[in-house]
Length: 161
Image (cartoon, rainbow, N blue to C red; front, side, top):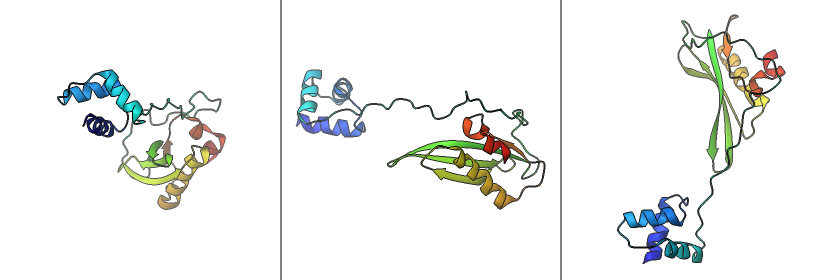
């Protein structure tokens, strides 16, 4: 009976609780149980809490590439479409690992005008989204394209396009 409660609480914690947190959870549910008993039940049933992953730094803002001037100066509004675009890369965790999503946003309507995905974070991913946006929207000269200072956006290839 206790084992069923331990398994249920462990499943509800997404397999992240160790014996101290499990005891707190089970006692909160009205069971009188000690940490050693919970630890023994977990050990006997090969129930181990998943460890947190270490933080992995994904952008390099301390690179040697030249940084383009900030033409927007925190003014993220536009009076017409295709005058100001913003770009960023987001990280999405999936069952198969990290998925990287590069997006170009038209700051007038706050709509995605170009995007690209990859299972690796590299400069080609950052280049694909604006290429797609340019092919679809065909902006006139004078477009301001704003991106972060990470190495993907400051690379020589990105600056050349």
